[in-house]
Image 1: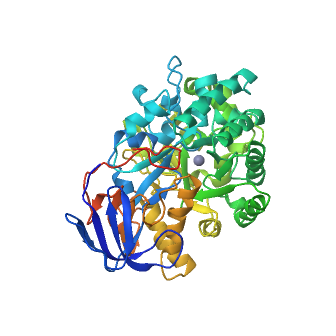
Image 2: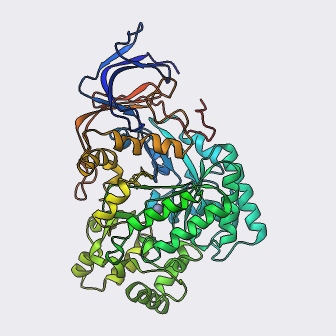
Image 3: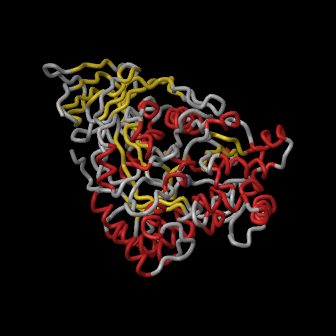
Length: 539
Ligand SMILES: [Zn+2]
């Protein structure tokens, strides 16, 4: 790849380590940082950017996102570039677009829609290699985890049961193949079927495969509500038994009865580390979550897939049983499951995005508001919507405590992950559009520090280390020139009411030494790569 060298003059360099900023020039050559120092000379043909008064940091790494489909459809990744993000980790919470059994029905289509968007048949791939070939060459870089749901569906379909020894072997082999091809690890989604139906034997077996390859095990754990403590223990046990490094996804305590418990949870992660368990965590800077609408129903409702779910909701007896589960928490088929709406209330569940255009009027309204307007019970609104949209609806849930959030976001084990669910239209959660500038702005308020050094560390060096990106995450000679320039006025624009408003204060973004954002305008350059798990960038 040949683009001219870039000399960035006079920036306050925030190098990613957390060290105080220092004023320096930074020179790139090809895709690398060639020099960092005072008063560097501009080589012939160099692009010179005056950065006096600006901060220069390593490009931000989004440690947790659901952009699997968006990378295919919108390779410019405009909303990420606008935030200074140069690398995004996809394949989280068990959801991903590979591997797939070519002979099996396209299970992923509806099932993943609430998180990823509705998937076309040709947007599901046999393996990492095929997916990589389809998404390589966008504006920014991608790191991809293997989704446990996709892996299990490829081997077992929609079976709601423990895997047999032969099925465990088949999953282990299929996972090993993806990791050999360059996937960075495995993600679990222990509240989401079919990942939720795995037993310990299956999870330990897969964790061992992850460990053998020096890869990462990320987990959306079984409960972030009343079962949080037990679910953290389950994940730590898995990491210990399997020997893998772990990332506890979007650490939070959801629902008012459990608010205030996160400092204790963070202490537990610290004691686990003292015992040699290599675990850390990610979280986004908002007090609301977002997910598929199917999370409001007990997992057993999804046994057999979408058609089986819709048939259950259409059956009077089964619908009554599901209503009891959701309204009263009475779910005999799902021991340990806690009804989300019982915990947070219908008024705190807002429709983010639907897939059926005829349902658009519901976007931005809470289930309580829609039910009141229709003069029906909120459960009937929920059931009707799941049927009409085939479960492909995305919701926003107001459920977290600001104090808990602060405890996680400022903790040394934390890295920033947007958990963004970018959708076409609708009223999505703003985290896909504002997480990084919001974190920069809020960390300065929370920590009272003079500069952005600590926030930048959580968005660069910490995730780069976690995902084994040995040549990214720092401003140093020899590192890949993924860089971002921003001003003191950096802040998010996206809100829950206007979730796609752009941030301000981020002016220039380089990926592999090429500008993808220059003076606030996207350049159209496509230097991004799917990064493979070998510590160095494969070109
Ligand atoms: Zn998740």
